[in-house]
Structures are given as structure tokens and as C-alpha cells.
Length: 90
Image (cartoon, rainbow, N blue to C red; front, side):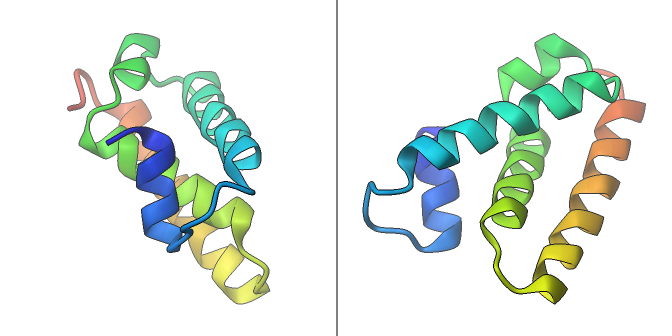
């Protein structure tokens, strides 16, 4: 399953109207992980922890409800920090 399909499944999106937007969010999430200090090879390998962080970031960006947005934002921040602090995350 591609990262795009994973995000769409998590958000329960069955159409392709948002594919370009979601693809941008995926790339932005990866760039943010790298910018924050996560190893680029680890991020690009896309292990389960990185995938979960990218999905969380995308869910945050696609959320309209402020409370839920903030919840995803906190979760992504924690995930980002844990990935950044870890070595050879899978």
C-alpha cells in the first residue's frame, strides 16, 4: 500500500479529489521530520513509526475541527521528537 493510500484509508477517503493535496502533505511531513533532525535515510525508508507520523501530520492538515487539529498536532510533535531522538528507527 502506498503512503497516499494509507493516509486516504486513515481519513476514510474513497475518492481521488484530494490526492494532490494529500501528496503535498506527505512530502511536507517528511521534510518536517528531516528539518527537525530525523535521519533522512530513515524518513525516506518509511518504517512503521515514520509512516504513523506522516499519517498523523496529514490527518492534522485535513482536519476542520480545531480540537481534533490540536490533538493531531500534539501527537505529531511527540512522534517527531521520538523519531528525531532515535537512531535507526524502523
